[in-house]
Amino acid sequence: MPDIQDLVYRVAAKAKTPGSALPAPVSADQLAAVEAELGFQLPPLLARLYWEIANGGYGPDYQLLPLVGAERTVLSEYHAERSASAEEESPSWPAGVVPILDWGCAMYAAVDCYSEAGTVLLFEPNAVEDDGAAAWFVDAESLTDWLETWLAGTGWYREDADEDDLPDQELPPWEHAASRLTE
Image (cartoon, rainbow, N blue to C red; front, side):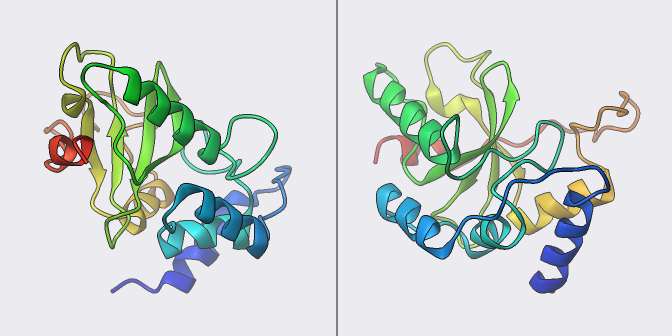
């Protein structure tokens, strides 16, 4: 089992590079308010990233969304996606899955807060027409694995990745998507 304290330390060290200006971490009260509004708790590691390192602004490529704030946040994007999904004939955003990073083109990295490990999912709705479940893929089995991939510089999203460096397989579909969308 990985040493979570060591992982948080290494993520903080990479996030706090010279010249970077990270936002202040969220307070315990802010974290509690977000979880109360969501109606569920964030996975412990995700919560620690926000209250020990910073309120977003670091991480792979486009960087983590802030948890709280005046503009786009994890909380505001979760509510927006859930509301839009509820209006669709075929829902696309399950309860308990929070967007943590906007990849652009309507794609998100998201964390399944109902999974013990905090499975990191890729939401890629652009090729989907009728089945919202078909837009969900497993990017990493856990938030720990996802962060380790970022720290190692081996993620599929690397700017310098070329076809030969990427895994031979596409990301696997998220097997729980269909059942979670009907909850």
